[in-house]
Image 1 (cartoon, each protein chain N blue to C red):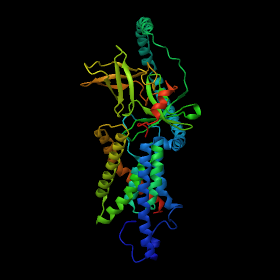
Image 2: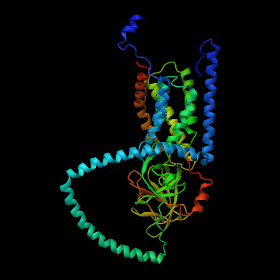
Image 3: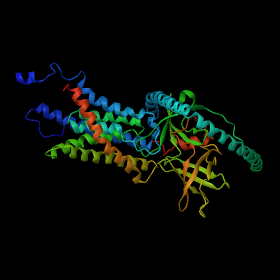
Image 4: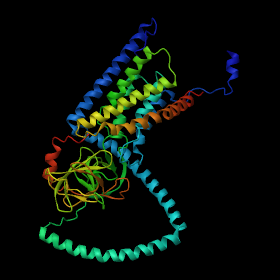
Length: 291
Length: 172
C-alpha cells in the first residue's frame, strides 16, 4: 500500500492511499482498545469470556486425549516393571507404617496446637471442581485455563486451589471455561505466613513458575530451606491455612519458593467461594492485575 | 508460450478455491494453537499467531489487504489472553513498517528476512514485557530472553511451513 507509485492510474493510486489510511486507522483502533483494556479491564469481560468458551472445550478434549495417551504408556510400563515395583512397594509400605505412627503423634500435637490457637475450621464448601487444561504459554504473565465456567457457578475473584495447595484466583469467566491468575504471576500478591512460627510474609510470583516470599517486618531473614508458606487469610481474597509454596532458596532479605500446586501436574482444581465477598468487591473496582 | 504450457507436467493445476483467504486462515489457525493443552510455568513458547503473520508478510507483500491486520490481531488477542488491542496495534504497525522497509531495501535474501523477523519478534516480546509491567507484573526483562531466542530460532520453520502452504494454495 505504501509502495512507490503504481503507475499513472489514478484509481490504483487512490487504492493504495486508502489502504494506507485503513492501516493507520487499524493502529489507532488497536491503541484505543489497548488503552481501554489497561484502564478499564472490565470492559471486555464478556467478549473475553466468549473467546474462552470457544477454546476451552477444545483444550479440555485435547487434554483428555493427552492424559489417556500418557496413561496408556505409563500403564504398559508399570505392567512390564511389575516385579521390581512390587518389591519397592513392600519396602515403601514398611517405611510408611513407621511414618504413620509418627504422623499420628503429629496429628495429636496439631490438634492441641489448633485448640490453643483457636483456629476456626473452614467449612469445605466447593463451588466447582475442574481441571487445568491450558495456560498462557507465550507471555510474561502466568495464567491457566480451567475447564469450568460460570455455568458451574464460577465467578471472577474466586480462589482456586488443588489438593496440594493454592493455585490462584479466577480473573476471566466464560460459560464453559475460566482463566486463572496463578500464584506465580508477578501481579499476584498473596498475604501469607510461615507455617513454622506463623511469621507474616508476603508471597509474590516471579513470573517464571516460582514465588518470592518476603517477611512483612524488616529484620533477620526468617526463612529456612524447606519451610512451608501458607495463606493467612488477611485481606479476605484467599481463605486462610491453604499451603502455597515450599522455600527452595534464600536470598538477602527473603526467599524463593516453589508452588506446592504445580499447574502442569495438578489433576483437579477446586474453586471455592470468595473468602470475604466484600473484599472481592473492593478489589475488583480498580483491579490493576486483570489484563 | 505453447512450449511453456506443455512443459508443466500438471495441466489444469491453478490456485485452489478461496486461495486469497488461505493466508489469513492460517494465521487464525496459528492463533488458535493457544488452545493446545500446554501448561507452561515459564512462558517460553513463541507467539505463534505473530510468527505466522510475519512469515506470510515477509514471503509476499500482499497476502491479505493491509487493513485485515487489525481483525486478525483481535482474534489473536482474544484467544491468547493478551490485553485486547495489543496485537491489533502491533500487527497493523508491522504491516506499515514492512511496507516502508520494502521501499528502502534493494534486495532481500533469507538472512535479511530472518533479521527482520528477529527485530519484529524482539519488538513483540519487549512490548509484552512493558505491558505486563504497566499492569503490575514487572518481571526482569532478562526473563523474556529465552522466549525471544526460541521464537527467532523457530521462525525459519514457520517461514518454511508458510512457503509450503503458499505453493499448495497457488497450485504450483
